[in-house]
Image (cartoon, rainbow over all chains, first blue to last red; front, side, top):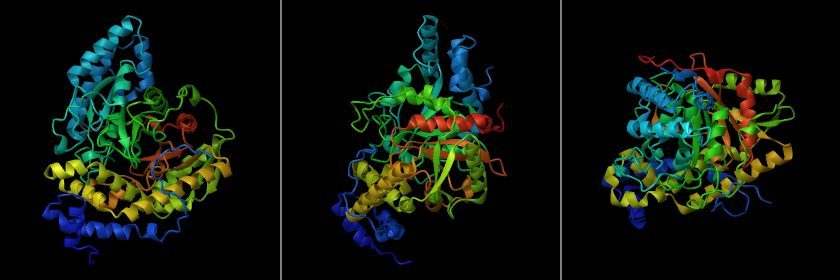
Length: 63
Length: 463
């Protein structure tokens, strides 16, 4: 399957993140990013109600 | 030589209290058991024999002077090698931390020691508890099989008696999975119930310090010593710690147990389904009322869970990834790099979906008046390591455990039967936040009405 991301795009993303990704990781990362994008399709299609994302995690149910 | 195969923390403690056994004898027997079983099972990265013997001597001297710190006094335990120990390196299965000696014990380790427990060693972990490798550890029931992970050493060691109890970490199922596969109990409490100070790597919103033991009562004994606020961990909940052991007693009459359809879908292997449905029948026989329900948002468990796990893992490893990427295993490094590069919008969507999961399960408990949920712990049995396709199989194993990391709810696995090949199957019980006492009571009642927790594996070449 053709990757959604190219090695060049991954290298640019990594540079933005300040992450020195070794050359041998670029292709596997491009494939992994593509695979993850496919994997999370159900999440991106889901109808999520409006509201804040969970940024702090307190498990207690408080009204 | 003491036969460890029948001892639990409770029964060993009773023998110690009665002076029928000394901690030194118990620890020597444990060290001997380690020596017998390690060549085949590889549960330990480090055995701390000298310090364990010294601690056992101190425990016996204290007991002789009338000091008994807790039911764990003199009991041999082990910890996953992602928890700091001041007197032994903590390497998290990675060359990144080769030789790292922590400045102090992790809070959980310190509390075990203050309770009088004797630390006999550090257990094997996947690299940084997330590695895509499968370490040398093998299942206690079939040495060719995947033992579960990342707290692989804990599950195997407790099953064969090379520690009487253990603590590990669980960010998606990493204690409950090996506990289920190895036929022992594994408890992940409410998020924040047990301090995570001194756990490597700096962990996010999914990770928990968790307990592996032979019985539910033993889990309760350890939880009682481990739970509580910790100024060193701002996520540790400042909530009272009930007497979890006293709360074990009580039948299940009137107990309402939800059975969500998500956990009984197409992913569930037929043999596991059969065993778990029988266990649910046993719960009904004990007086519980089963309530069928749906949690539609749980279908998003894996994309939500992996997105958050990867994003938080990648963020927490940025420093090491920048400074010493060559010291990671390549697959682990790529996994963490992936996490560090995930689009922010995707992570935000995952966090919103997580909020939905949390509110949905809360509403289910409230509208149906539930005391707990009952599910299979794992959708499948353990398989031969040679047959595993790691990127595909490892995620499959956490489909049923990860929801309780995402929602922070307490969840315990107990053995509930075996497959036709004799492989253990686990029943998972989950409760409302901070309802460990309820979850433990239900699990204890089930356990005491059955005998699955009494099965012990035979280790080839060992006594």
